Amino acid sequence: MWEYLRNKFDGYPSQTKVIEKIIRLGLSVIPNLDGQGTIRCDDVIITAASFARSLSIDRRVVLEVLNKIVSDPSLKNFFQNLKPVANLGKVSSDMGMGVIQIVPESASKTGIIASIASIIARENISIRQVIVDDPELVSEPKALIVTDSRIPSSLLPEMKNVPGVQAVVIL
Image 1: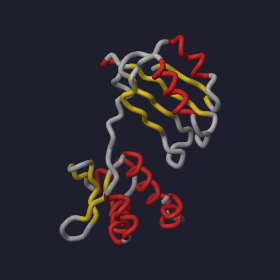
Image 2 (image 1 turned 180 degrees about the vertical axis):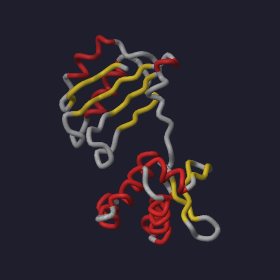
Image 3 (image 1 turned 135 degrees about the vertical axis):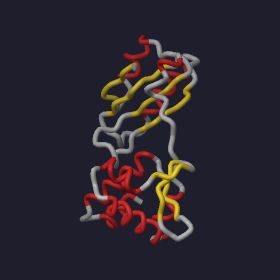
């Protein structure tokens, strides 16, 4: 789908910004009764004008992107099925949960999350959430792991030794 999106919006940097933000936020694009695309966060409608203001672009650019999406069956299917996800990372510490951030040497390295999860599971700590940045959307992708309880700092050296891990930070 990334290649298809690149081809469809190549040469239109403002439209590309719209597409990237919609995907990054997990917003969906649903046609309304008159066939025009609307941006939604679950069942909440976000106006083209407010979305455009968030990107400092003209709302007509947003409307053009929405029309491209609803008129293309592949894009329509993709964008109708996006869903937002609550990121507990910044509030987990306040809730007594643990949060670690994994910085990979390369986002394409396989097995990093599995190895870190294995170390956490060995300590009988349950993982509540894993959120990984998509390297197509973020220049320096990271992984955020939220656990039921705080991660003991004694696990940091072992986690840092996992192949492909550049850094581990307890937040």
